[in-house]
Amino acid sequence: MDDKKLITREETDVKATWCLEDMFATDEVWEEEFSSTKEMIKTLPNYVGKVSKDKDELLDYLMLTDKIGNSVERLYVYSNQRYHQDMSVSKYQAFAGKAETLYIEFGSHTAFFEPEILGMEEAELKLWLEDDKLNNYKRFLSEILRKKEHTLDSKTEEILAKSRRMAQAADNIYTMFNGADIDFPTVENSKGEKVKITHGNFVPILTGTDRVLRKRVFKAYYETYDAMKNTLAATFNANVVQAVFYANVRKYDSTRAMYLNGSNIPEEVYDNLIDTVHQNLDLMYRYVALRKKLLGVDELHMYDVYVPIVEAPDKYIPFEEAKRIVKEGLAPMGEEYLKTLQEGFDNRWIDVYENKGKKSGAYSWGAYGTHPYVLLNYQGTLDHVFTLAHEMGHALHSYYSNKNQTYINAEYRIFVAEVASICNEALLIRHMINKTQDNKEKAYLINHFLEQFKGTLYRQTMFAEFEKITHKMVEEGETLTSEELNRIYYDLNKLYFGEDMISDEEIALEWARIPHFYTPFYVYQYATGLAAAIALSAKIIREGEKGVEDYMKFLTGGCTKDPIDLLKMAGVDMGTREPIEDALQLFKELLDEMESITEQ
Image 1 (cartoon, rainbow, N blue to C red):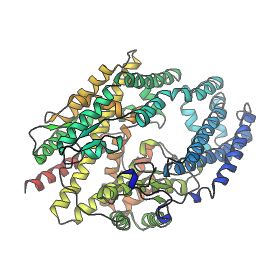
Image 2 (cartoon, rainbow, N blue to C red; image 1 turned 30 degrees about the vertical axis):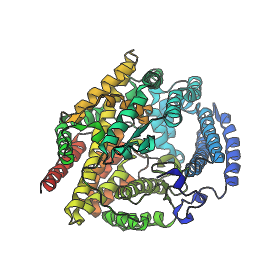
Image 3 (cartoon, helix red, strand yellow; image 1 turned 30 degrees about the horizontal axis):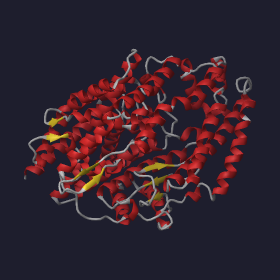
Image 4 (cartoon, rainbow, N blue to C red; image 1 turned 60 degrees about the vertical axis):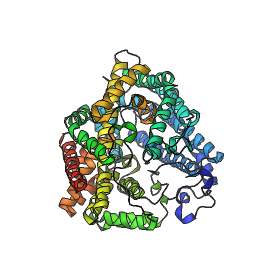
């Protein structure tokens, strides 16, 4: 949509906006809490040398840091969400900057804690943990003990905490280039009309029917990155170098070991994912062949990857209808879950429509002590109905974790962050596929699911393999040049898409446009999350109330157990290949059905 035609924030119906007043009644209240929290942070050095000597001092410190941490989180979330609702408002940009500085200051003033605790006699700390007074912090302190060999002395930890801002330079430079400075050219479509390329319209154009435009946009988009490829390669390399530095200093065998250790994820989970997907690349090749056939092209190019192979239902779905569809699809989750979902719908948890200056995309976010929030840019498409189901999955996961756990035990790990959201989507899409009698609509829905497998299980695994290769090279003393990065990425692209896809030379530069690579070893969790969610949704449908009961153990678990163990409680073991194999079996069954429908 043309930004000039967008309504302003002030013109937006209040009922369709999120109620951030539930977090802070006014900006003045935010500023008061900011000042008081800043003062509280200044008292933290008083505990240096005391937390390891006296159990009561330790408890006082932990309760104080809970209070400060929750406050910093609230300040940070509120300021950023205010900023995201209209990013032209400099006041909230400043609020967000202040909150980030406070967050770093808090980290710096608590850096002494882990080294001091780890300097204690381990037997004495374990004896302390038997005291009921510390029961709330048992998991938290046990996790510190688990990472003992990777924690350094207090002075070094303080230096490392202060160095984080410097270490973020590569990420910040890339974000600034990719978000602000990059300037894409204007091309002509098949009718000779001029089209200015932007990040925002790149994928929408590639989903369009004008193949001439798709090809021109694809080539021009990547030529823009090509012109800066050496700078971008140096930035990418610098980010891997900083990761290697921290891994070395903290005595990890690799950067991957360091990033996975945060949630205690065994490295074989990562390798199982790549190996299992490799063994099932034939299914991806079948999907690529089907795409080529249904598009009716002699050659399938990378600029044909996003264009729908099944026509979308041409109808606008009002938001009220979207809520009804989602609720109906999530009926297997039971009355309690649906009641909470409705609570979110009725009480302005959701910022619904696009407005001028609003952050693009969609997310769920919030802070402990207040209900979660969802940002949408709802456009009335079926895809956006699925986005609503997805983001409310995140929101209700947070809601149940926060409701059932204390602050220190509530925040679930990134490894399971996508499970609840994708589980919602899987339940919704299965319901809609079973309900429809229209073969066209059924084909569209099945293809939506197939696209999720292609985009999440296969594509994110390809990204994960790219990270595994590139980080290992830097660990072994190599420098990542644009030529090397292009070669690695291009070879992986050919492997994952197969012979029926023309791997256009421009796709070698796709690594340069993926911001997730600046958060190393993150993307694989999208793929494992999808596999776990598919397994859980199948279990809920198959077992009914018992399946939901097991699933709720996971949803309410927060971080009281390792993510792998939380999923085991729900009935899924991600330490094995089975969930990935089961997900790929469903992909095969959907592919069979899609081929059958399209042959009719």
